[in-house]
Length: 411
Image 1 (cartoon, rainbow, N blue to C red):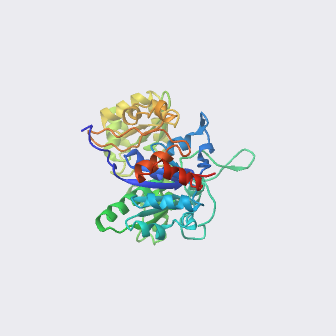
Image 2 (image 1 turned 90 degrees about the vertical axis):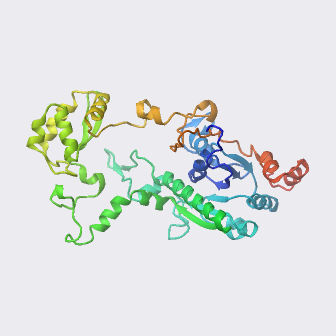
């Protein structure tokens, strides 16, 4: 099946973006879509933004722009706009990755594009979306997680609040939702001949990914006669998510002989398996707990016993124990140690720096029996301008020269 076309072969997307929102089309390019990044003559300043800088180009840009072609167009010129419209005529989608309305102000918004291509799917992805009081508020990726309540300020020894290390959710989830919406729009357009305009806010995506906490607090606004906690907690209305597990014992981090593990025996069956596996059936007999969702909160005596038990084996030995005795135990990695984990090595082979300029993670989608195409390196500004015009529009040297003379590619 190696000769099968890539899953998204035949999907053509034009992207006009700066910084992180361009990741929307990275997912599509990884799956074989033809993505043309339309850049201003000076290029996307993401090449110089954020660390690390790898041989003069930011890792952010190398990752987000992998697998794409770069066409430099000055969309402030009539010649540049005409080329954009000609490219849009046969494209499936246009992605605007900036504050909403950027392309519309250049005469290239959805209404203009659908005049030349009624099937076009127009996706605009931005920080706070196309509506609401924050619509035009400048922002960066951390803002969306702070807004969504995902990351809270920490305070240093001098009393100054600071940004703690945390995973970025909105800046990554927004492009994923955007890619999903784009594909849905293209599928419908191919069936009906009618395109659509959709918009994605990275802040919305952050909130949506953290739905359990916000929906839990909303549910708790209802009377306790209608909404309670778990039976294992005497129906106490605990804080949502992990905030309600700080005092957990059977669902908690423990120090191993060489690191940490996460123990997750909140079901009675798993708890029994663990106790028998470590030769301590007495622990189960003394504290059998509820059938489900029992974290044994506040049982400091049991917590001390488990602390001593977990310290007797390495993390790898505890993972092997979990497999042998059907007990959920996970290694506690950091972003730095994760690549040495055998599960990571099996599932996420690095895309090599020799090809992409930096070692990168692959898209985490696997088609059984198929190998996805390895992306190409992120392009230099306008590296594919002439190639794209020849391949997609059939232009010859004379037309390219005339467009250059008209300032379409910058002066």
